[in-house]
Amino acid sequence: MQEKEMDFEERDAGMKVAEEQDIVIVGGGICGLATALALHRKGIKSVVLEKSETLRTTGVGIIMQPNGWRALDQLGVASKLRETAMDISSRQLIMVDDGKRLELPLGKGELRCLKRQDLVEVLAEPLPVNTVHFGCKVLSIVLDPVTSYPVLQLHDGSIIRAKIVIGCDGVNSVISKFLGMNPPKLFSRCATRGFTWYERGHDFSGVFRIHKTDNVQLGQLPVTDKLVYWFLTRSLTPQDSNASKKDPAYTKEASMEAMKGFPHETVEMIKNSEDKSLYLTELRYLPPWELLRAKFRLGTVVVAGDAMHAMCPFISQGGGASLEDAVVLARCLSEKIKIKMQTSRQEEKMMLEKALDLYVRERRMRLFWLSLQTYLIGMTLDNTSKVKKVLGIVSLILIFRDQKSHTDYDCGRL
Image (cartoon, rainbow, N blue to C red):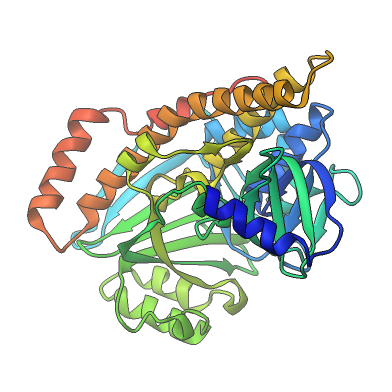
């Protein structure tokens, strides 16, 4: 810490006059906007620093399960989002090799697939004007050597002094790096996601279908009566380079190549998907044991969302868990911030740290179990080791007999 403080003092002299804020949220994605909204609902002002020039509405589908809908209800936006997506009534596993169909448990409560754009816009709409500051890329964070409060340096040379910094800046988080967290690991598989529009309507009704072979898994579920979201996971190859990932033609071709033997209508779905909706991404994750020992708070700096718990999408909880983070964090902070009393700077800082500790304590084991289940499913999909595959299957049976129990979680009242 001494080296960071010395570095801060050396640079501070040549910078602009610092702006002061109470709560700064780094990252204006789903978690950052949800956290700002949760604080706003509790009467607490915050500022969101987003590096993009506009809301990041790019992206595809977000599968929202019952626990996520409970969080959205607390944020006051669930009813509006329900109007944008149809209810999923059943889930099927279809084995491609022999066509066998199995009915899978859906969980207790509603399941819908949201367009990421709809979710982001609905979270941002209720925020006060100028809550989100666009074009603000955070380069570094240090602790002030005098006050011990965080100081952010932005790409344009400006600095912001804050009482609380919440890192919602994703898997490549500047804030989690400052906290000393290990970077997410690269998984052996990749995921392709997209939308397909059916002008005359589709016949999938409200069914979430998963088509599976030993090495490829394709999921498809309707968003509306004309729009279908699909995702495909397969082994990561050297050809899935950064340049290739941005090429819709490659993404589509590689997906269809992996789907040899799949039903004709599923291949046609990929072929007819909207080029602008296609995303090919590497899968990154924090191992569950990292979440047990990671330091999620330092002073009044804390993390949430993917910056805190990057995980592969095998149980579709990345979005839902981030919404839970937002509700729990705002509740813990409001319980301390709303206490009206004369306090010294040191007393105030200790009070805020206690609030952040409450948040970390409440979230840690929830995130561990989500991460562990996701990790074990990943082991069953990893074709590099038969031993790991068997170990993953046995562990899932022993530890997670009810594999949809993760959707029963209730983050509580805001």
